[in-house]
Image (cartoon, rainbow, N blue to C red):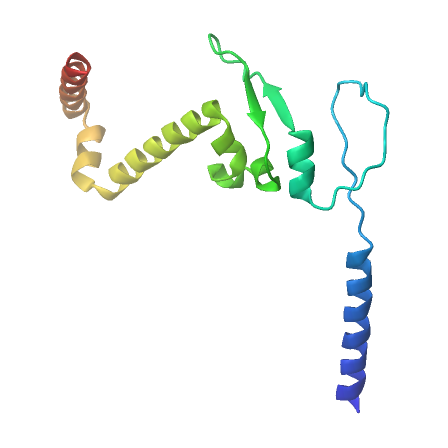
Length: 148
């Protein structure tokens, strides 16, 4: 008897959820600091993709980096608003954020290499060895710059 009641409750809940899903309305508008110059009008836009294609949302961002111009980020889908530890659409859409992510990844790989290499850790812990390593790396950098 309990199983039948449980099945009945589940069936009722599922039917109720289906009804709610069909009654969802999507409100799309310009939600920012700029005044809306267009008169508001109700328009049927069936999907989010259609809304993105119609309104072509974008934002100009000034990262406050000296010598760097503000950049405009275009949004084509909901995933473009995600950061997701640097793997989301927002980082991919922004040149500046992509560059920062690349630098962070390089530093993370370097940190991991140092942590997993006892000989390298020993070199970095000794001041004289660390200086010699720095000199070698600077010389390699100069050679790379001269050949590029």
